[in-house]
Amino acid sequence: MTDRASGSLFGLAYGDSLGRPTEFQDYGSIVETYGVGGPQELTGDPARVTDDTQMALAVGEALLEAAAVTPESLAPVLCRHFVAWLKSPDNTRSPGMTCLHACVALAGGASWREATQIGSKGCGANMRVTPVGLIPGLGDEQRAGVAQLQSALTHGHPTALAASELTSYAIFVLVNGLAPAQLPGVLLERCAEQRTRYHADWLGDLWRQPGVSSPKMFMAHGWDECADAVQRVVDALGRRRFEGDPCRATGAGWVAEEALATALYCYLISPEEPVAVLGRAAATSGDSDSIACLAGGLAGAALGMAAWPVSWQKRIEYGDRLARLGQAWDGGALR
Image (cartoon, rainbow, N blue to C red):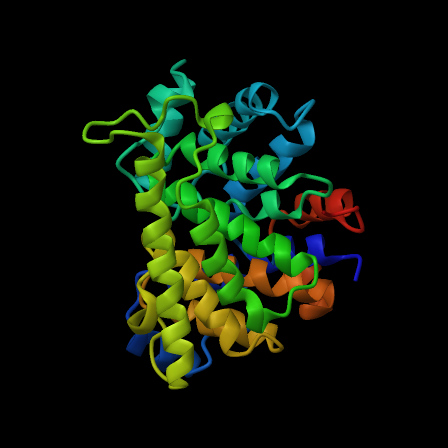
């Protein structure tokens, strides 16, 4: 398939839109309204999304604009796009306070190392990282560095960094044809391989925090939390009891590693049924829009645009911008 980048980006937005009205609702209320399958039809024209899609577009468009995929070229462009998002009249979707605080600091002239919220591992960084896994031609070091840098601009916690990289890596391997059933094992291997890897060229001295003796120690904490979260997915899938609120199995998704874990769980129950994946992810008692946007990005990366009803493409908010990114990266030489 040559349209997996488009499938992933549109899947992200579709999940975000379906999860938008269910965020902050308890599971019983969601089921009462939509049934046990959750919401599976877009509403509105356009079907509105949240800050999750807006910030994923900011990351993707910064990557298109940057002269080179290096920390020196990319960091200022990312900062500019994040500040533009902050000041946009469309920034009315109740974004997270971590992103707001960091972007306000960036807008005031702070460097990203001064602006980042070092104590936050909220899901606001990995819900926007999907574009990083879709860029053709990046080497492994570049992709990892970009994923962690875009996190570090707002969420400097090591678990936020690791979860962002792991999310982009999941997208990358699915785009390249990995069978979904193999994904948990591949991600656990990634956690082990990267556990003490610190990308100093991209992160500088971010690791220098009270109580941290080395960059290896700094990153190990984040990767360990991600590995534990993926293992919970493996355990939950192995029980084969998929009824009820997915958050009870893998976490509510407000923090980075849980958002990825619950999205993975919702996806891997039935990866061949992408619309059902979105409904299941949106029918969660936690951060439903972020869980569903991550799940949609995974499903679309594996199946391309064929995963989604054709009529949705013209109804989703920001469809023109999503299409531009998808067309830029579809069919490229990935490695």
